[in-house]
Image (cartoon, rainbow, N blue to C red; front, top):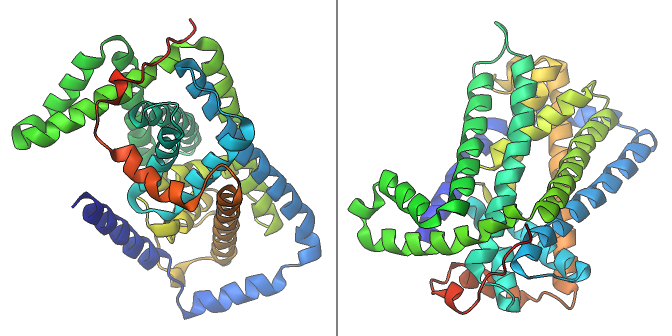
Length: 367
């Protein structure tokens, strides 16, 4: 039932986003003209820098996980961690409704170092930190562009993104000191105990197992290194947007590139369409349009010429990102550390309900 709901959400998002960005005949003609004007020799240096930044992104995004696992008494060799993370990132891209987030915890549980719920807790901390970094930057960038001519969606998006991740941070902070009380409070305000008591008990058990991993935040040294890796990762991401935009001749500023990255990141944190098809392009166009003078929500027939260059850029950015993560995931599966069998069993392992924390004690973090 849960899988069916996730697939319905994913397919619904796919249909909506593809409808929003599907090119009409005129757009296809304009796109062909844009790609015809591109000169590979001129683009080559930009593409080389772009792929170099992708390497930095992959390393930063992967290796920082060790700094969340170390306070729990787990240390994974870098080569193995890179393989596991690469497969997990590919799964996030491929699976619907963010189900791919369960793959890395599942792989770690199969490795035998930590319960899946504790591993999922470290991923939750990761998502909260990422969300805060992105939403703070998006809020600052969009707030600076507020005014009578700003699109109606802009400031509500900034406020909602910031509120959601500040609320998530508060949940993490309160869960460290009073996990049982915090989880019970959240369950009560969800009304789930009244609507579905059995389901509520299961969710409460899993949440309690997960929040026990939030103690990693108390390890100041590892948390500082994790945040530093995260800043490197997101900085390389934003610079990648800037460099590729320049390769297409788009006059997108550094701030505009980072804002575009942030808007896209916030957009794909929603239940994702399979492969992020349409979703990635639409939110990228929303961000670029803020700085290049068009509104991606308008009909394509009403768009200025720069829209079609931005449309080509958004699709190329998407194709390069997808190709990169599929390649890295395939290399991870070809490594001796992760197999197809591990991948198939990872999601089941991550969602298994069992009192795991009783036989896998969490190490106390360094203060």
